[in-house]
Length: 437
Ligand SMILES: Cc1cc2nc3c(=O)[nH]c(=O)nc-3n(C[C@H](O)[C@H](O)[C@H](O)COP(=O)(O)OP(=O)(O)OC[C@H]3O[C@@H](n4cnc5c(N)ncnc54)[C@H](O)[C@@H]3O)c2cc1C
Image 1 (cartoon, rainbow, N blue to C red):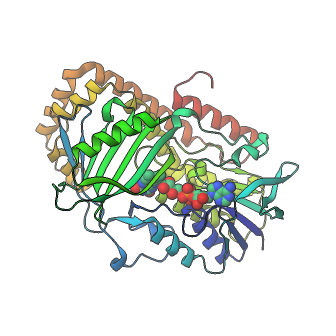
Image 2 (image 1 turned 30 degrees about the vertical axis):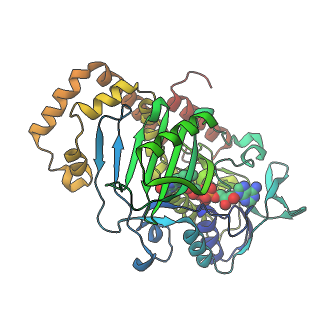
Image 3 (image 1 turned 180 degrees about the vertical axis):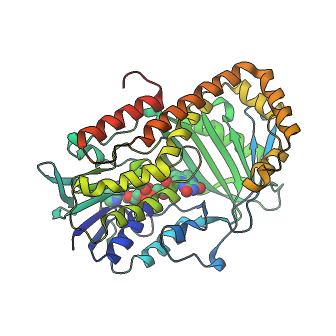
């Protein structure tokens, strides 16, 4: 059996580690942070079924907390849309520290070293052959890079494999804070309020009353978030939500991926998983699910095999792109369109009746969506054509998205480093709509 090093004790790394251990490999995880600090000190939403889909023990119902209800606010703050609730406990708000402990329990038999930041990769020619950590070179048959969005290891992989780096507009620069809530003040109903293009910024902000009765604040902008912009957004959220006392419990800045998955996920003796491979559906908060499922896919691709060449690992990339990647590509293109919409178009979409609370409720499940009557659809088309230029732009981007998705689906079936790199470059141009990168 092989010796496998995993960099990072996030969801992607630990799920891969658990399954690889079960296949009989010798697995060691190095995590930069301490056990207490490795997980974010807040809750995030996830479908409960994902745990079983990733081959893990189901989370006991007694440990599950229902995801909260949301409302979206238009850029001019004059209109709102309510997002309907999913069926009970279909989606849960999971405490990240609970999630870390749960995954560590799943990883019985795996060596996990906290306070152990990996310094760099070791290579033998074109093969990744281990890592330097805690002042020592540790050799291995394979290294899994699960070190998150700002992975520095991608750049150390021999260039011939072509692992891509993100561009500046691929990044969502977020600030998140938990603040003491005054429960005697006006409590929000629904508990979560999300501001689209808040204060004219390209991004979102939210202020929620969390399930733990604290004020949960997020301010996120594409590309960069200056201290001034952050302060302005925080002040506005304080003014609009008086249950938020502004007394901090915890505050963190963190970068989130906003792009489609890397077009190259493997090299000789190396694979990337989760955020370090940008495996989130842009703007849809699906990163935990993607990281866990990809961790399982990677482990199952390796199985009991001890050939860790890019060629042997490639079916992992193929499977990921066939199941999820192609769809994320489409969403990425639509995201580029949506983020660049002028505020007036977004305000119009909220106020024109194009989308209403009732539509949101109807569209919340496939079954309900069938209930949209022919008359309602005709009415929507009528409204849509009142903003013809918006329709034209939407059609243009949808066509580009479909085109990029077609390229994504034409991923090379067999591994050839050159062909995969070229396919990845072509896909990138399609997604970004650029002639040259
Ligand atoms: C504010 C916020 C809200 C989010 N909301 C949601 C949500 O609601 N639902 C959802 O599904 N996703 C959400 N996400 C995204 C989700 O958190 C990520 O997509 C997911 O955690 C990625 O998991 P991962 O295992 O790839 O990486 P991570 O969880 O980022 O883990 C990487 C680990 O690697 C460690 N590391 C880094 N460098 C080194 C090094 N040199 N040596 C050793 N270890 C290292 C880090 O300390 C970290 O523990 C949110 C993210 C943020 C920031």
